Amino acid sequence: MKEYASVDDILNRARERGEAPFIILLDEIEDPHNLGAIIRSAECAGAHGVIIKKRHAAGLTYTVDKAAAGALEYVPVARVNNLSETIEQLKQKNIWVYGADMNGEDYRKTDFSGGVALIIGNEGKGISRLVREKCDVIVSLPLKGNINSLNASVAAGILMYKIAEKRDR
Image (cartoon, rainbow, N blue to C red):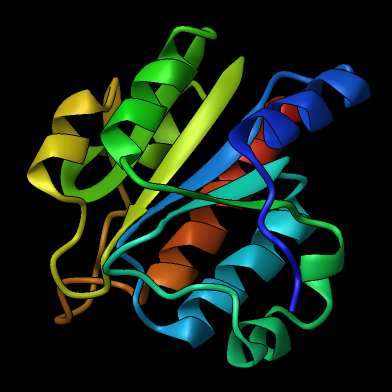
C-alpha cells in the first residue's frame, strides 16, 4: 500500500509547480469508498494533496486504492494527529481555510483565489465544532430537493471543481 506523505511534501508540491496551495482536508471521513472517490476527484481537479486524520477516519487501504482508480499514484496523502493544529499551520502560510457545511455562504459566490484548504466533514456529523471554528469561511451547496445533504465525496467533487475553475482564471 502507498506510504503517507507529510504536509510539507504537499506544500512543496505546490511550490514546485509554482502554484498557490490547493489542499483537501478530511475531518473523520470513515467510508473508504468516499475517501477513495475524494482522492480521485482531488487528482482530477488539480489539488496538491489530501490530509486525513490518524484517528476516527479511513486510512489508505486496498479498498481506498481501488475506489481512487489509480489516483493514489499521483496525489500525496498526509495523515496527521490533530487537524486543528494542521489548519493553524496552513493559515500561517497564507492559506485560506474553507469548510463545507449546510449553514454557510453559497459556494458560487465565494472567491477561492490564492491558497486554499477545503475541509470536508464526516458523512453523518459534518465538520467537528473545533475544526469549524478554525475555518475562515463556511461554504454551502444549495439543495433544491427533499434530502438535506449530499454524499461527502459528491460535495467534495463539486467544490473542488469550483475551486479549480477560480484558479484557472
